[in-house]
Amino acid sequence: MSAVAPQPEILAAFEAAKGFMPVEEGLALYAAAREAAALGLPLLEVGTYCGRSTILLADAAREAGTVAVTVDHHRGSEEQQPGWDYHDPETVDPGTGLMDTLPAFRRTLYRAGLEEHVIAVVGRSPQVAKAWGGPVGLVFVDGGHTDEHATNDYEGWAPRIAEGGLLVIHDVFPDPVDEFTGQAPYRVYLRALASGAFGEVSATGSLRVLRREGPGI
Ligand SMILES: C[S@@+](CC[C@H](N)C(=O)[O-])C[C@H]1O[C@@H](n2cnc3c(N)ncnc32)[C@H](O)[C@@H]1O
Image 1 (spheres, protein in one colour):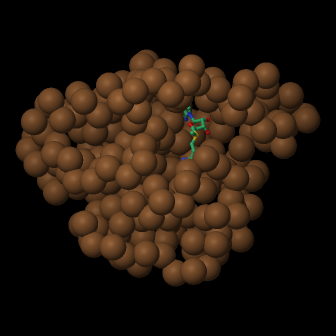
Image 2 (tube, rainbow, N blue to C red):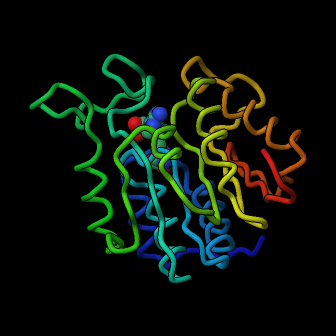
């Protein structure tokens, strides 16, 4: 995969955004997004949170004249709820007492100047996947970390990846790291490889990039 890098202002926006992705993994995601965007199809993300990774997909989409689509119910994953290790009190809406990352996400995109290159879908990944009609050039799985969520994301979105398109999975940990991250994304990664439909392109930190090499999932 070519070592394309985002412009300094895009990288600065990524680093300034709330989120969990290290720069090294962001650069690998960006390289994958640039390659996949050349197919001219939408780039699809499951797990928007506050838009940190979306910035990179949006910039790659902008360069290629396509669009990034990002899906999230914006109520946070299990490990991001109050009382858990990945909770950020600033993400709680005082009006409801629930997490709502949509306002922070919108600020992130606005500040990065990328609003017009993103379609944000507020909803649950399996429902959105059912309603989604066409092929995509890339699927980035960074949603819920339970087996139920990770499997739903794979089964809902991987069938949409066009020939030559990329499947990118975050938080792939071959060895258990802690009780919050879990190994569901790792199991999805193994399943994708075992299917014969996807081959591995790169591994950077916990980010895995796979390419569609055949039909199915
Ligand atoms: C780890 S965060 C995403 C981080 C983001 N990609 C970044 O780089 O900053 C996971 C997100 O997935 C969302 N999520 C979890 N399960 C979901 C589901 N079933 N449908 C839609 N979004 C979901 C949560 O609300 C949370 O915002």
